[in-house]
Length: 116
Image (cartoon, rainbow, N blue to C red; front, top):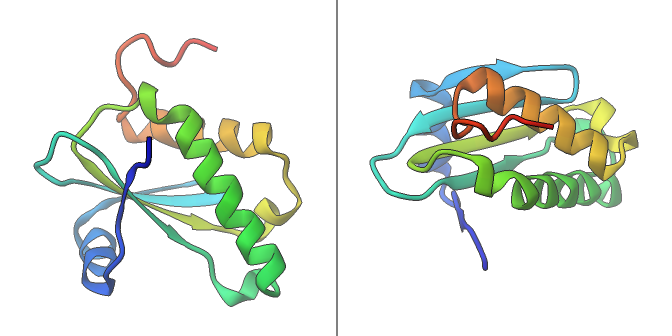
């Protein structure tokens, strides 16, 4: 099943401006309640990370990690994930662990979903 995404510039700007920010060495996430029953994901990867091949790989890793973790998240949030340089060299399990850590700190994991 496909998940909802943020697409418009104003949607990203609203989350950047009004959302809470959490970061580690791999990702920065912004989280904002959206008043809906489902989460919406936005992905931002800057050209500082490298050429299109590297940027697209980071986006794929973020999407796959989110897909594997989304059942463990509370609903009703807009989430923007910003990739940082170390993400270009990581494997999927490592990115998933980094995102899980940020989701825990953001407080958007369902109860009992943080068991690993």
